[in-house]
Length: 443
Image (cartoon, rainbow, N blue to C red):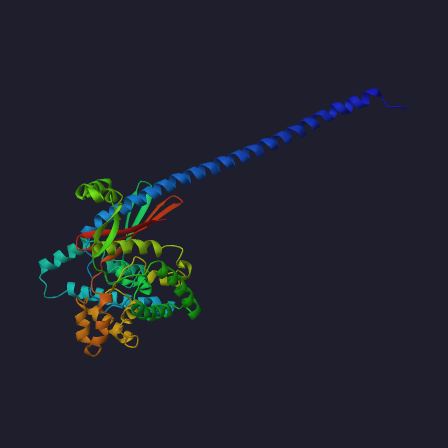
């Protein structure tokens, strides 16, 4: 009735290979999981280490590029150009995309006409054979003309700014490599932008006039009355912390005394008062106008780049397309500039500046300035007064806020190494060959 006792032993022996195979598969799965986990962790660690290396390379390259740019500023000459027949940059900020593309088409037509005119001049029948041969060789040997490159690219056609490059740049971007980092340096004209410090003016009368111009600027940029009120509240908090000054005079200020200065005071003081003199830790110092301006520049460079200002709202795009991005931040001067350059400011900034003289006449005066500077740069504000004799009083009222030569510039440096990116913004004042650093902000 019972089975053979060897039957169970034979089944056990037959099951052993299956069990061994199952155990082997489990071990292989565990090993493969451990190997995959280890490789993922190693790759992640390697990626993090490489990113840290790239960050260090990008930051060092950014710092080196800023130092290079600051050292090179004194040798640069930012010359304005005349643009008598070209589309103007003044209203690009307000153009819709179809209007902007139409303006680019006008620019392309202008470049085409110039090319044809130059071609006709080169084939003058009165030119002798030797000169013609020489010109032909020069054309073959020379690099393609910049206009030809623009026309060949089509979409690369840009509306030139007051210095030639696209507004607000004063030069074409400089690109080079430092180690494995690719560095780009851009220099912008800060006097071509609306000085945000105007809204923070200490004088109540001036501040009211500036408020009208600021509202005009915000309306140009498409802000609602509620958003303008929100921005004004932020600016009022900054003005409460530190009002903005446009007029300065020498003044006395208390400064800490060094140990040597306290010793000299004690020695020169009669014995009766020597004990009191020894306790003095501060003294009076004359602070020059230049020193006061420089100090204010540094203070507002910090305030206007702080969280006190709603930069998210100011940076909100008003126009976004493949060819450009417009926002109020692009047209705002955050480095405590006090003047607007009428040769380089766009219409929205010009009207806001002229509003110090008259809100009603600001659009007409701004239009006259735009048309006159296209022919040749305005050398003095008196030229505008002579061209608009009926508005000379209005122009005189806002004269203290206008200039015809920029003195404050922004240096933007971007360094990219692998996936890491480092940026720095430096502001400098430049008068002739004299350069003064206002502040440097690194990201």
